[in-house]
Length: 444
Ligand code: SF4
Ligand code: SF4
Ligand code: SF4
Image (cartoon, rainbow, N blue to C red; front, side, top):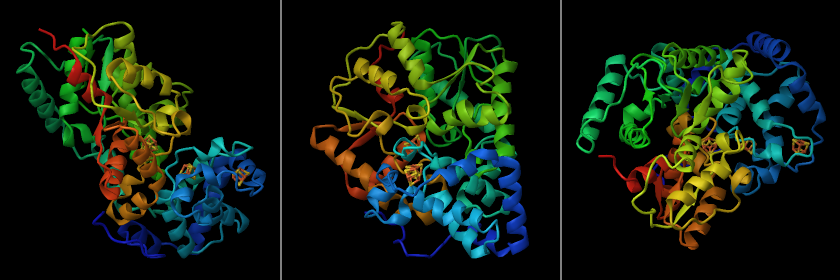
């Protein structure tokens, strides 16, 4: 079982939230709320709030509600009731104590996974409503400490993990050297102009999972890809500012990322296996910058893997022979519809594929999404307790024989890892890239 603190009702052990709340005054709260609601939300928020008939049909769509004994406060509508409904009803005249609780609900009790929107007869998007609440909290300076630290890192270094420029280059050189033990002339090409593919990753890859860059280099080499990575900022495609509600910083980060690829005259960006980063370039960040679609073609790793298998660019020695199941990351499944492609890649690479139920666009979030895992240890126990529905899915897939869970998203990995540990589910986690690297024919 988890070693983090037990859940204590109404106790908020987060220095970021508490320090922010101490600086609030009723006047500041009312001013900021009215600024956001009048200048930033337009008709959308009002329509959502006015249209909701409180029918509760969305409740069964939310894994928090299902996992927490169907407590109405964890239902999507219940979360809006504790936040924006009350705020709009009182025209922003709410107390610092109210903002403190609203911050906990918006940042840590909703993964912004959009599952509930599929079950609302009016298509009300609660994730959007929670994002507005987060935006208000950001502007009030009431943000959980851990996620705010990643946002600070983004603002200083343009990456999430305080990786310095020389550390980034050193990591790539180190991975290139390692890979050369397998393929003697392998390169991780830096700053090559006019490549077909600009490859970008999230901040934690060079920091904690550098072998994923190694694997990507091997896959690109095997596929005969013309590719490059930048030596300077723009390599990190992640975006916790999108989740704290710091949209100004989100725009800056997306610009740095897009411009790095455009400066190198790349034909497209291929992103590593991350869900939220994809949402930030394909949905929120690009739109905030005024582009309906990204200014340069962008594909997720699933689409890239699908391309190399459908065009027979790489050969495999034999299929991965342990039974696998697949976790559908919300941001690339509900957000982009990549579930069919993901299954085609899994079937091309694995011998036995066991579906989790529900799956595809109906899949439950891993509990980490929307920056909830980035809110850190104070909320960890509550997060895994709220993922009981996901744990049950995993147990059921295991009972059918699945030994390995494939999760093509970094945050999902983190979330599922915690669930597997907390509930004692004996399963192994892998990225699609892990599987492909393990079974592919290594080039001469
Ligand atoms: S967006 Fe996801 S986590 Fe948030 S209320 Fe809806 S279903 Fe629940
Ligand atoms: S299903 Fe839609 S209308 Fe019903 S409570 Fe949920 S958000 Fe409101
Ligand atoms: S972490 Fe994964 S499962 Fe959870 S919201 Fe993000 S993409 Fe979805």
